Length: 201
Image (cartoon, rainbow, N blue to C red; front, side, top):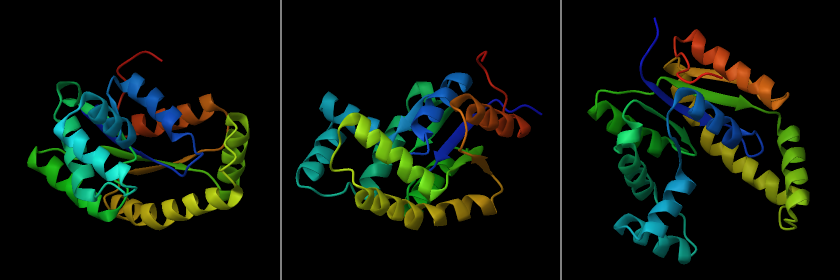
């Protein structure tokens, strides 16, 4: 049976290509890609009350707290273009944010339909990020810095995937291969769940 909603979360380490794949999934399912970084920047540039709060925190060199992050994501998910679905990228990133998202969605009688996990070996992620840093002239992206970022991902995100695996909604996708191959693996997994694409490929 084909579902009409398409509420997804895409998860993967830095260098997994989740930003690129997320955009392709969003286009195919005609749903907005909701990235926390983009939503923060949009609120700051629009001068919203939430944006001013984020700006003060970021300018002080602090991380945006879970409560405020969740408030901003909730605000974005109540906008009309997200009524029939969305793809979350970068949220939730820890168990506290999972609880916030659960509360918000259950209050609307909704739930995530699928969690797309892009599985990329650590060494592959490091090599991709080193190559990207070299191409973009980012000398501060040393192997040590990249490894630390991957440690944070592994420590914070593994428990999240555990929660969603228990619910049976995680599709683990081999994230090594050509862009097209990986995209097709994602579509095949989602369509096996009865989540048919809305736009022609």
